Length: 396
Image (tube, rainbow, N blue to C red; front, side, top):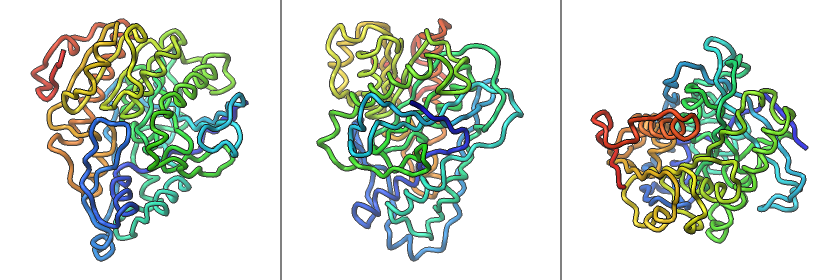
C-alpha cells in the first residue's frame, strides 16, 4: 500500500548536522576528517560552550538557484512496502519511506516549498542539543530557501527518472541542490529518505522517526543492500500505474539512473547490480560496500570524489561499461552535497574549494553524465579536462 501527501515536508538541516554531531558526541568542536567513506562525522568547528556564551547568530540558509530552463516543482510522497518489515526496527511494522519528488515545472507556478517539516527540524535541534545562540532553530531550518515549489504546474512530456541517495546519517535534503538542478534540466528526481538511518523522517502518520542505527558500525555493510530494496520498490511504485504519485505520467520508465553520496554511492552500485532497470549510476565520494565484481556492472558509471582514492582501484577495474573517474581539487567529503554551503552560511569554516564551486561542479558533471547516458546527448565536458573547471581532474 502507499499514501501520498503533497504538503508534508523535508528533512534535516545540513550545515547544522556539523555542529550537531560535535555537540552530541563530545560537547566540543571537532574538525571533520571523513574520507570517501560510508561512515561519516559531519564537519564542525565550534564548541557548545562558545556557542552558548555567544550572542544569538542570525542563520538564513539559501541554496543556489537551478541553472536549467525549467522551474523545480516538488511533492512529498509516503510509501509502505507491505512485503517486508523495516530492517532496522522490525517492531515498527512494514518498511515506510518518505520520498521527495522534484520535477520539471512551469516557472512562476506553485508556492515556495519548505526545506523540511518542523518536526524533522525540532528532532535535529533536540537530538543534537543545539544552543539557541547558534541561530539554528526549527523555524530557521525549515525555512531554508530551496528554489523548489509546491504545487507547481508540470512541464508536458516524459523525462528520465534519477534516484538520489544521501550519506549515512544524513537526511535526503542534503542533496536538494542537485535535485532541483536536475529537474530544471529535464529530469524527474526522487530524493529517498532512509527511515531510521538519519536525523528524522516525518512519516505518513505525521510522526518523525528517530535514528535507530546512527553510530553503529556493525550496520554499515547492510545499508546498501537495504537501500537497493527500497529503490527497487520505489521504482515499482512509480512505474506501475499512477497510484504512488499524482505526476507519475511524467516518468520515462525506460530511462532510470541513480546517484548517491558516500554510502548512497555504494547503494547506487548495489542497486545497479540488483535491478537492471537502473541504466546509469554515480558514486560521489563513497567507499563501495561491497565492491562490485567483474561483470556485475556493465552499464555506465561515474565516480566523482575529492582525491584519487586507492579504495576505488578495484571497483574501477571491475566496471565493465562506459565509465569515468573524476576528482576535484580542494574538495572535501561534503563538497558534493549541500553540507558545506549551509555550514558556511551558518558561520563555520569550509574547505579550500568554495561550497558554491563544489555544488556547481557536482551539478554540472552529474547532469552531463545523465544527459549522455540517459538522454543520449553527447557532453564534451566528459571528454577530458576543461579550462572552465580546472579543479576537475580525469583519473582515467
